[in-house]
Amino acid sequence: MRKNLSCFVLLASLLLTSCTKEGDTIYQPNPDEEQPSTAPLVTVIYDVNGLGDRSYNDKIFRGIESAAKKHGFRTLQLVPDSYEQGLAYLETVFRQMESAQDTVRRLFITPCPGYDEFIRKNNRRLERNPYADLLYLETSTPLEGKGSTFYIDYYGAMYMGGYLCQDYYSSKVILLVLANPYTQWVVEAGEGFVDGFNSTPPKYNKTLKTHYLSNEPGGGFHLADTTALRIYQEAKVNEEDDVCVVPICGGAMNAFFRILPKFSYYVGVDDYVFSPLINNYINVIKNIDTVMEYYIDQWADGTLPKHRTFGLRDGATDIYLSQFHYMSREDHQELRQEAIRKEEERYEK
Image (tube, rainbow, N blue to C red):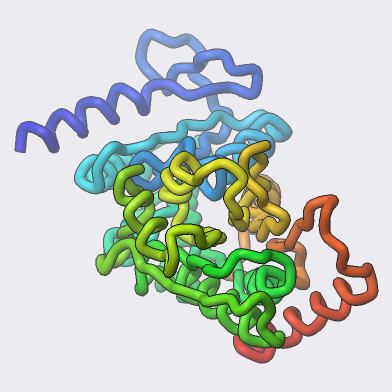
């Protein structure tokens, strides 16, 4: 009880401040101010320790800050250190948004699947405030009641990644690391990679191994280095085998990044990952930063869509190859069109 109370007190103090586009501190309305700020406020609550993952959450941060700077919005970006603290943040933000008496426009964003139950049970509370909006990502199931959602279909880009991984890397073992078997985009990204990998005749006598980091919904996005090392070593058939790691597990990928030995192989996921010690010829990209900027632009214009699904054709996902790749432009485009077709057939777009 005391820990939860401290979370509420902490957030209450945090909600008094946010950043302008110049990075200056602005205080929320209080009796001592002659002219409280009326600039729109964008508040984000991330997954537990989400920022600093070098991929998904960091790109969300960049997209939001870029849009806020463009429009002159204030931002408040919160990173809980536990799910209990995250839920306390959620309750406090919802309470503030539903009870606000001013006309300040507020957008609340949550990119964490672990908060799904809370969001779906509480989103109607925001209907009391015509100036409050909610954006929940990523889900293919729209919210009933107030709030917008979107989903980025990763199947096509991962299909290309699987095909190219079979074709490019000489590693005998391809280790597909998935956060958990419940988060939709993780599962479907894994299925796309496996389908792409199996769509071309095998080379170098490769073995594809799949490992889930957690059996809990929303779990597996954080990992100790020692656990990552054990998983990496267990993937080897022989001690001298090369292992190519494909981490579809958010911030947990940093553990693999740290433990990979010199000149190991790695498929970058969500963002371009560069290291002179790691060979990442293939990078499967989720342009969540661009999508976030688009959504805040829509919110600024008052045209926030109820739900949208993006994919490879939209440019919400993509694949980048290093300068060492040998695939011709024609073959690359042919593979891309095949991946788009399979993605759209699968989800009946």
